[in-house]
Length: 103
Image (tube, rainbow, N blue to C red; front, top):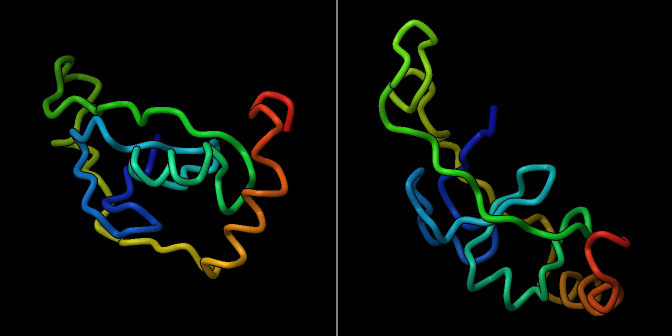
């Protein structure tokens, strides 16, 4: 199950569970759509591409399965990139011309 991180790891904007602006890489690094555009769709951590983060239903539509935010809330732990702006820029420049499916 996805962690549903609460913020963009670059600009720290809030990304609540219902946000359609949240983007994730395959390692669940989480960024806002604006930062993903600035990053040329390159994850500063792994170098992969991003996809829209799915929206977790707020309630359990199948109560027996105990799903939804009511049973599996979003994370409250905020994350931030451990890389400097200069390092991120160099990383992005190095691989941005390679499509995500070929990285």
